[in-house]
Image (cartoon, rainbow, N blue to C red):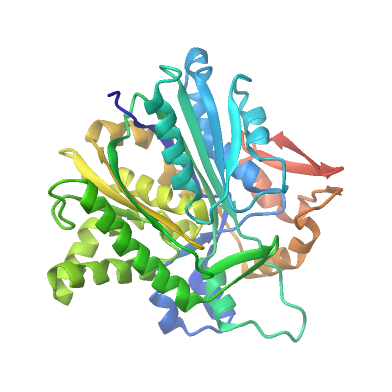
Length: 419
């Protein structure tokens, strides 16, 4: 059997961010409760940014590092999102165009809430394993943004919305899958998947999100437990503590992950609080570093966590990483792979931490103005020219860095330009 896994991966955490503690105070939220979320920053999508620009900006450094011959072997491009811009046309066509990929390429999109990135990754893995085109590569782009719209005057925000706002972010992860798993070698066949019908969260209309936060938490915990047990059935001699040196999670917010890990440690080992805390810091916290700085980016989040571990973990010796992905509605999966010091060195060329540090910090006034303006680029916008004047400071900060931005929408077709 051929080796398969991630040849390269990159995270794009936006061009701007918001300090979420400042946001919590601005919204008069209970900051004691807020601290349990374990979030520090959230990426914010500006009017000239959308899932397409995020996806292209994540994938471009990977594609640019390839030779032309290697680039031409990308024979599948999968976009994974719940932030699509059209009910029929996939955003993969836009991303394919602006990356300048070979036209002999399959282009399609996957939607399954926050599980979509893993669905895309597993589809790409099985394409490579099939050997229907030996030596081919697949590019998976998980990209999601949140655009909150300001409440009408006098309208009181619900508690759920108030605490969703600080954690809902924007971002994209691009993953190149091939027979050369420099960064993350997949454990082939080591998968536990679990799903059922539940109405925990949903998007019944393009610009509306609804759900039951308590039901979502219980479904997340149930799926984590059951997908791991299924993995355990399929892979001999698996132990939750000893088999995996790190754990990457779909991370709506850090506090939720801490609860899920605590639940498993108690059920499997009757572990005491101090033991759980030490294990959490050692095996889980490295995967939260990037998630805490971009917020929940839906289908991309579990891959953000994986990238965070590979960049920030200790790989003096090869380490196995267990990965958990959950998508509301619901579907979940627990899978694994191995990362090495050589893979970490290769991965660090994309300077993810540095690029997060370079983002422009929004003031609360700029953010509130942005919320009011978001209504002008809702789903289904037919014609609009994007005004970048309000964010001229941001434009200046990214000029010359080969960032793609949205310029206008003309008869529903989106037109972009490079800065």
